[in-house]
Amino acid sequence: MFSWLGSSADMAIDLGTANTVVYVPGRGIVLDEPSVVAIEQRGDDQKVIAAGHEAKTMLGKTPTKIVTVQPLRDGVIADFNAAEEMIKFFIRRVNRRRLFGSPRVMICVPASATSVERRAVHEAGLSAGARRVYLISEPVAGAIGAGLPIHEPRGSMVVDIGGGTTDIAVMSMGSVIYSKSIRTAGNAMDEAIVNYARFKHHLMIGAPNAEVVKKESGSAVAKANGTHVTIKLKGRDLQRGFPAEITLGPHEIADALTLPIQQIVGGIRQALADVPPELTADIAESGIYLTGGGALLEKLDVRLQQETGVKFKIAEDPLRSVVRGTGMALERLDEMADLLIKP
Image 1 (cartoon, one colour):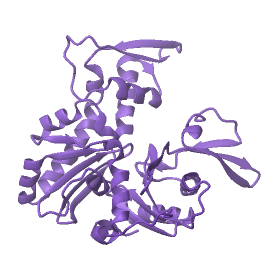
Image 2: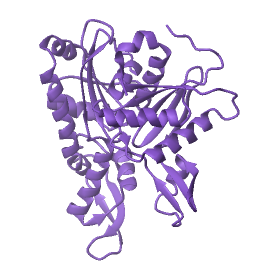
Image 3: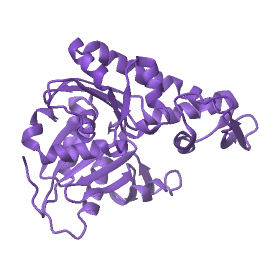
Image 4: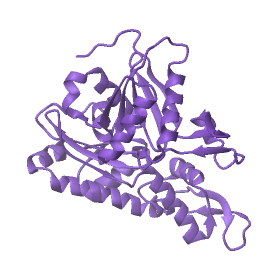
């Protein structure tokens, strides 16, 4: 087992579409910020002036010489230069006032990231100053962080619902038996709410507003009509062009989320059909674990169980299961070597 030195700068990074989370052994989670970077153009030069929460507040509000960029799309790098600068910014912030050399870094990527996408993440980490960069798939990291018995001779299944992708993996005896990504996750749920408001109520709302509604009032199962819960949405009336507010009934957000949830269900059913029946029996007995921010959607586990006939369990602290698992894998490199993926 690898043991950490007290002065280690090594870190685990969950480089997500919506948020980037950094974990340092011995210190725990030291950074959790939106995956947004603000860049100022100075002639032929560019300078990062903000990243994370500060940069997110600038979205849509900057002068022409400043651009705000979300470098990741569907869990992979869409803008290499912006991603590199963002990673550099966060590494410097984590190691501020610490006299460390270049860190070793482990970064998680979606299960179905292509070799080109994996190399982009690997190169971004090296360009940002890492001494070595290791890669691990998000559902595997989530399984490790959730404490699943992945080294035992029995099937363990995890579904990690992030911002850009839902990643599904089945593991046994320290190896990945099955893995797949679905590019439907938290952002798609936000977009589904935006579309529902637009086409059902002729109201234009932004994705940030939809995200708030999802987190505060969303449910995967329609609430009973007798439930005295209403949801207010503010936006622009598409017919008159004026600011407007609508009130949604207790069942409407569940209706709005039907399509993305059904796409996730389809991926889970496919996984259960593709793994050997002996592993399917193990999974049916122990259940499927949910990690990622999407696992926090109210009654999602209930809805998935209704759709598949398999019980679902929400991992403890699902938002941070992936980054904790990534850190644990870096701590135990020898033991986890077979679970890492090549850039």
